[in-house]
Amino acid sequence: MEVVGLLCVAVAVLTWGFLRLWNSAERMRPPEQAGLPGAGSRALVVIAHPDDEAMFFAPTMLGLARLEQQVSLLCFSSGNYYNQGEIRKKELLQSCAVLGIPPSRVMIIDKSVVTFDAAGVSGHSNHIALHKAVRALHSGGKLPKGCP
Image 1 (cartoon, rainbow, N blue to C red):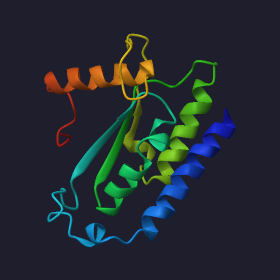
Image 2: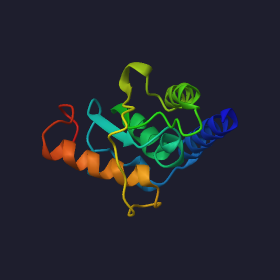
Image 3: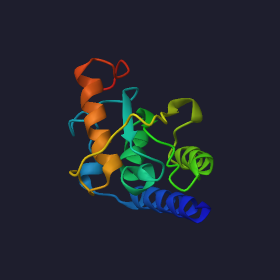
Image 4: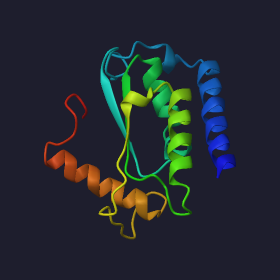
């Protein structure tokens, strides 16, 4: 499992390097001109379990950091399927550190009440539950202030 964590961190670092080298005209536009919030805005990235931050959202989080956004991360599970939850939590915090998110802005909710169904981007049941949970939090006005 530690190998998976190291691979996730490696992907994040490689993605960061790619974004640093990528020099397109779109990247050179001011954020406001590109329709993005300016420096100091806040963003909340919500994931189902550790490794999603690197596999799916690393480029987005690095881009937000480049725009001087304050990025926070909410994770809906420790990924404890093989009794590796504590290791995966540690790996998540290490990955977030590489992505510029301090531990104080990472929250892991590890409750068995999150349930799953059969739709979603990758078909992974945690990802489907995540979508439903975020919609419910948004509808109920329970997302942190300043997070769309």
